[in-house]
Length: 74
Length: 553
Image 1 (spheres, rainbow over the protein chains, first blue to last red):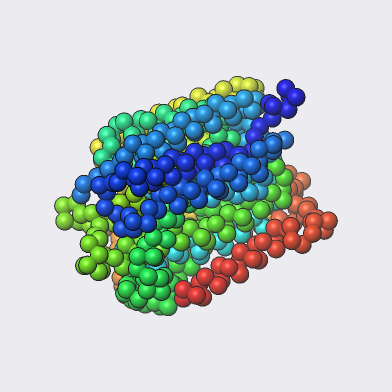
Image 2 (image 1 turned 90 degrees about the vertical axis):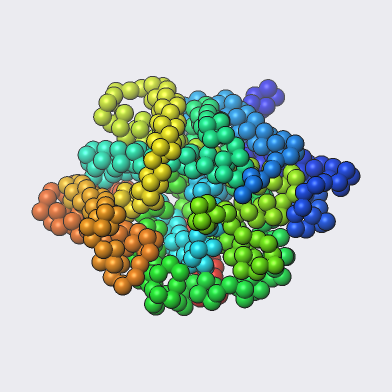
């Protein structure tokens, strides 16, 4: 078991991890702007692209993480 | 122009990226035990890992900014860099050249030259590549600091040192393995960070078709205006595009530049190595949907006064590279701005890591081990690889300061690939496919080709000769001169190599086994199903390439 835990995780696991973390932060940024308002004026500000794009990144990140949670590189 | 403001969330995204890549370096160090782990990522990459790294090593942030800006300036012609300027060469590498590279179990492109020709050709190419790589790495570092200073308002020294030291840490810890890992992370960050710009731009204007309707016709065509150089923004004919870009510059870069080819060397077997550039070709064809579409959106918006969109100007001169950052500022709210900036940072740093990992390999094997210390042990070479990484970063930083004090050096850098890679492609092509080519022929052909390319560049730069002599037309742009210079340098190297080979001694056939067509055993793929064969995917890629060229003709 100890030997097994030393095997390298595949890159796809780390891709999932960073997409999950960054997507989560972007999603939270969108929720914060929606809740407390924002001074920034961007085209499509009313569509809150940070909420749905952040959410999309979280979903993709989770898919990569779950698909590779037990995978190792020989 | 006011710099793009960053919120708390944007800073969190950027800091997460820095912490993540440094952590990757420490994590991967545990698995970097031998020189093969450090220099070739243990030769265990799948074709997908190697393929995405192959593409990402080339997909730097300077390219993203520069090509979006060039599209604003030249229109659809910039797509030639991604299609005819890449796809045929990548497929040729995968199908025809990779067996010679991979079968020899060589560690670098100069290493192939040693086996096929001799030590002097290897050292010549190794030294030229090492110098070129460090110069490009330093110039990129300078350009990155300039971009971050201009668009985000960051301190020049802080942004340069922070990214250089981060790259030094993770590449010194685990070499090519960490470079490949971060290149793949960068691939995803670039797509997630920048694709939304294209999507929102298309939504704002209405459709892709409407974007083309809003720009001049000469900017929306790929080939139909190439018969007359006065009819297209790049001022070039189809012959210049096909011979200079599509043949010499493209094949010279994609099939011989160790920075990209090194990723294929990390593949776990020959089939994966052959699939590496073929998989990359599909994604390469898609990159215009990031950069070309972005440039066209910026062009379309700037022609509509009611949009309020315009590029940055400095001293009355338009800064074309600002097209992408201006669109990020236009569309991205808090959080997404951090992602967009991180995508650019990741592109810069992955490009830096790619240059340094290629440099440390060529320095260690093709200069240090070949000339300075022939008896070095594998452990010593691993140590030397780490030392070369830190030293390479140090010289890159020095080059960056040099570039800062002399910005005109940027003009020279744009031409450097045609000095080194264009003639090298003639040497490799003849070396792999003609067994009569001799070591002396290759050496003198390479030297003559490099010298002629440099001389033509200097000649045009200082008005000793007209660029129109090179381009064979009455009008020409810098880019057209660059394409044609590459063609002439290739042709000179090709002719001199053959001529000298006719009068000098060739290597015995038994020494060329596995290195030259006709003396290399063909690897049978009969037991591999058709849908797993590299040739099948190469044909699919070629079909997609033809369709894109016809659609945007």
